[in-house]
Image (cartoon, rainbow, N blue to C red; front, side):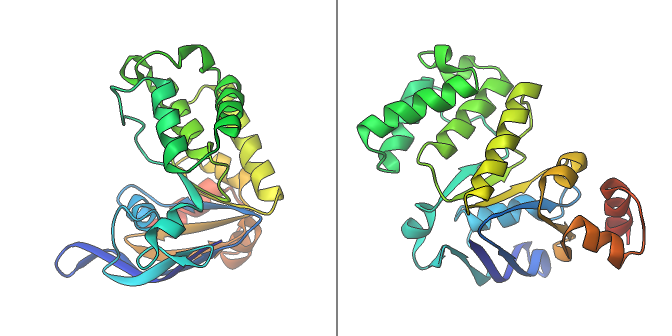
Length: 240
């Protein structure tokens, strides 16, 4: 469970990138976080994961404050950032073993998880190559494998399908569904509205730092009295 309590963040004085955000993401749901470029999605995700500190408010991950108990909070989530271009000089296996050490994944479980995840995403044979030699899609896959390696309860994914081939994208969506069905939390941002419409239990739409809608797709249609696609509703909400 992720609780965002009255969170604000400014990069420039008197201009809030995120303004008074309140949001609860429940166990057992896939929550889609939507918004146009520059709306505050990635800033929010970086605050949830402790990369940025909120100017105001707090964020709890399974009851642990990211400000007051950062290590406890971070042990309870796996994070896929918006760019997979990290630790490029490491070999794939070195990167995964490094994350396994950070998250205290036991040796036997580590080996099984690495093999299971990398075979599913079809990069097992490339683990002894440097990540800088990987294609963009392969880098995305290794970052996803790293985020899920410790089997965290909460998945925080920033544009996770970017660069993935159709099979990997399908597999990830199935994993997200199964993770939520097991009573866990999936919070992800996406620009692919069709994916959000088919996959999410609820969505939140942020625009200019303000949360302008939270609910199911059906609640959105009811609120705006329109029988139309999420794409058309999204454009209407964010333009307003």
